[in-house]
Length: 195
Image 1 (tube, one colour):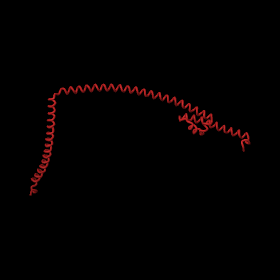
Image 2 (cartoon, one colour):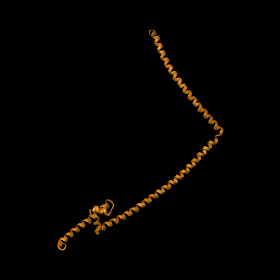
Image 3 (cartoon, helix red, strand yellow):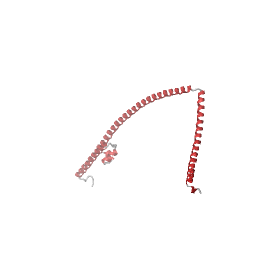
Image 4 (cartoon, helix red, strand yellow):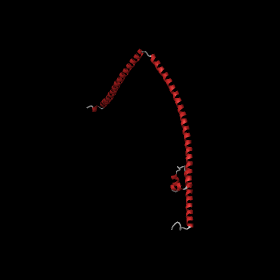
């Protein structure tokens, strides 16, 4: 059948059905936009088309759907812009705070360095004072006494080792002599064993 022979009531019914499907699809688009905002998901034409179960072509071709998506994207852009501005302000405040903390730390470090330098200077002065009290002869005398004492310690260590070895040998001899005496006493007590 050609378009001229189609009865008028069928065309009106088809147009009405198509209009209802379009309205349902537009309602799903609005619902999808609301759901994406609630879930804080990224809002894009593709995301709205997937969620509303319509084609991207529908979103571009239908003026009502296109206007809804454009308004949502613009609103999201403004929100994103305001969030970025707030985030930039927060970052700037954080950096400002960090800079102030760093300045305070540098001041404290400089004060500590100055105190340490002062203390080092005092200690170096005390060392020089101690060194000034010692004459060259006194230093030589203390050095030679130290060397003599070290030699004496070595000699005493050697003597101690020798005496320790002699003590061990004497104890061994004593044990041997105790056994020998015990054997002799046993022989005296039992004269039969002698024969």
